[in-house]
Image 1: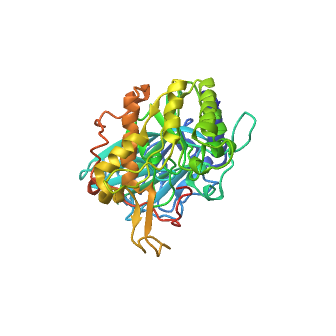
Image 2: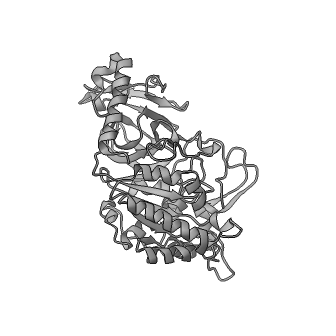
Image 3: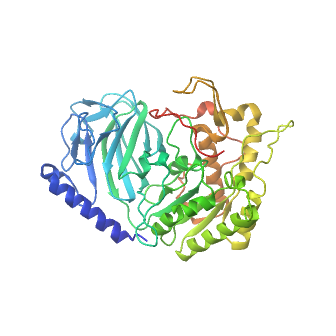
Length: 453
């Protein structure tokens, strides 16, 4: 387990070594975090200036990243922190090299002489602020808590998580915190980053492609949407799910060992598998055989650490019968989870039941908008139509994340107290309208379908 004191210890070592290599910025670096002033205006005292030419290098440890660009604007303002900003008509990334841990991020947004509209995502398109607008001459400060990680397992029997080749280029397994600034007119004045305190509870997510932080448009999962529902300074969502995983393969690849190494008393571990597990054949395999046995073993390990296991039934696939009802495609796996939760006396979120209600409420035609269904040639290299009835586009992932929020409330978890007060009661039979969901695309990489189905 990484204690709070250890987090501060390794953070202090990192910042001390970086300062030795960069004496010119030593006076602007805090002992517990970073403060950056964006734009070409005056530099706020104690902040590091970020200009369009401040590109990321490992030696420097911060800067505009991944070959994206921004433009600097400045006006004579009331204070240096907000008299300038970086903006772009395309999304841009900003990264800071940091040790693994939970961090509080504070972003100042706005323009002294115009309006702004900004979207903030972290790491692999993790939604933190979906749409923040400021009026002409106004500024707003937003804060959120996020988890960054690497693949090293510190302490215990195993050394590293066994990553798939496709994971090695993902932003969430590297040695830095990456922010994506998006929206119609992002105006970023300042970014501050501090290690979070020990009272922050971590919500670890484990599962498959319906949970993982999907790296590529147009795919998305509920796990990368749910961070935006929680109060800063109280909850950090740590998504350790991966596409194509079964419960047994996640155990074998040491994904759970990584979670156990970080888990502290009072943290949560959400567990949602089933889509790929049902394809495992042979003696000993099955919902009420190895799957249930593995669930029980994982629950036992989490409880040993003082953590709170939360079982989540598999989200439905989109398959309708002639009467407009969802066809059950997951066999006994959802029921095995329900039985295990009852026997082990652990909380359960019945996403399988709620997603059925949601899909049927949308209907066969409208529910297509929740999934990756697109005509040919809408995305690079996709000269054939995309017709995926398992994986979500961002709208669908967001609607599913709302069901998970409802499940947290219905299970009366203490975690429910950390849901933002503005989040209303959620009814699976009344999903939000597709036309009202805002999601400007992240920079497009290779469009690759997630593993699993």
